Image (cartoon, rainbow, N blue to C red; front, top):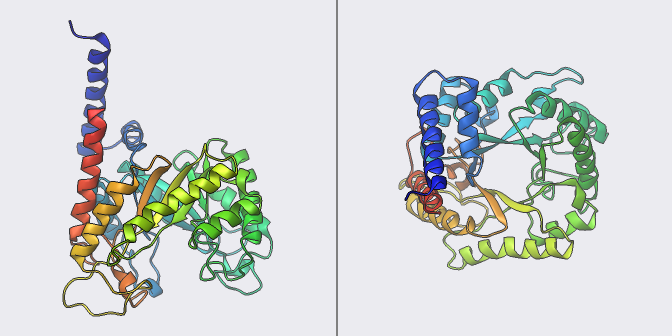
Amino acid sequence: MVNKWVVASVFLLGMCLIRLHVSVNAEESMPENVSISVLNAGNPFGVLEFLHWDYPWSNYKYAQKDDIRRAVRLMKEAGIGWVRMDFLWEDIEPRHGEFQFVKYDFLVNLLAENGIQVLGLLDYCAPWANAQNQWNYPPRENQLFVDYALTVIARYKDQVKYWEVWNEPDSNIYWAAQDGLKSYCALLKGVYAAAKKIDPDCKILNGGLANGIASVNQLYDNGAKDCFDILNIHIFESPLDAVAIKRVLAYPKLAYKIMRRNGDTAKKIWVTEIGCPGMMLGIETKNWWIGGNPSEEQQAEWAREVFSKLIKQEAIEKVFWAFFRDCKGHWNNGTDYFGLVRWDFSKKPAFFSYKRCVENWRASKLKK
């Protein structure tokens, strides 16, 4: 006799697959988009991509909407569930009190239509908001940043539920006034309290930490425990180093020990940046910051190793490859070749490694 719960489960799975098929192949309406997002909610595979980059200093990476659509189609093909993307303060509020959302409305809606979740990165400083007139200094008043963040969260609260406050605040590249995260934690506290009033269901991530365990300790030492919902770290190692994967796997475990010591083990860890260059034969450029530039084949193997092992750690919930598409002369070193696809959108071996990891993860879920 067939168990009635098995029958019910098969029926529900069938209905989900039907809805997914309709949303992909027919004119998409909001219910179909929501259904894809629900199906993707547990997907641990993400990427960092600079979809907002239409500036001269980025060689106008995404100046054309067709290029953005092309990138998103490829993301969907790879099985990517999450995109970490900036909601750049100086874009959105170029002058105090004047807000512009056309660019970001398009990006958020396009990703939603393709069932891809957004981790919204609230950064950096609008130059008018600090005395240095610089993007990588904190604002002269935290409330200026809080007001911008709340305006963004309020606008997208029905589509974006996960927000990261600044990027790598422990790096003097992105937060020039380093003070052991003290001033950053004050900013984080302000955003967290205000965000929960605007959208109690939203989740706040600390800015991805660049400098390892010392920064995790500083986050807690500065009293930020109750001001983020998910611990956010960045991990970079060279696949040319024989013990690189051991160090990658050790870092989250050490971070979790700090969380345990602070009574904070109910939270998950997201790795919102991990990656390496993938260089095609014949291309010459300076080494990336860790050392020699890996080949495209070595990058592909690193992607396979990273995703097949990291997502199995109990404390880790999401892992984001940095980044999806190569850049063109932005860093002028191997960092320009971090992409899973090349500048011309052709697929690297790493694209297929990533996609296979997604397929293997999905197959493992079906077996359970």
